[in-house]
Length: 277
Image (cartoon, rainbow, N blue to C red; front, side, top):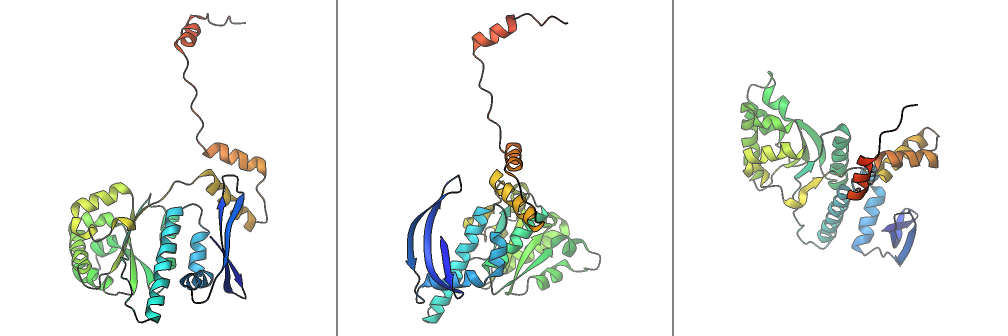
């Protein structure tokens, strides 16, 4: 979908397909009316810098789609508020399966900023709460950290919940997640780490719905090339077609060699070794 703006206001909506060669084929163009819900959605997309930040990230298609769904739901709630209809409550807690890298952490932060405008994202380090010598009561510290409905807690070092003092923090989270206004928790770790936590605290993780569990996708060759091109553009440089080809060859898996027939295998084994010169 492509939104076309005039004087910073949504004007047209165009749908198109994009093939593997990067060529597009337009399907349909229609004018957006100010009374439409999609007009409000497109208007928010234009003004939302955090959404632009997320869209500039290479790959992560599932995460971007989920952010657009959250933004659509938020726009829908504004529409319902206009007509004095109760808004739709969606879970703000998520699990992101990945490798735990800094790049992934930045993507998670961009997702939260783009998806929840009325909340602020904060990083909460479970290790600091559970093991710091300055924290005499981890239960009291956890109760303070997760005591606001206007913050979304991005959990770091979640495996510390498995420690003795960390288990006390987990019990606080379980209690708070069962309240009428539960906190919003975002877990980002490897799948193995999340599975260990789910085994230890099934009640806590049962509050996170399946549709809010997102896997980081492996970068494709096209994603990597676009990232390199963007980095070079900032340096007033350009990636040549030959260089792009070498990048693609280094990333894309090479086709496996065709298996040799029994006759070829026997013929190769029967051939004499080469005579040394």
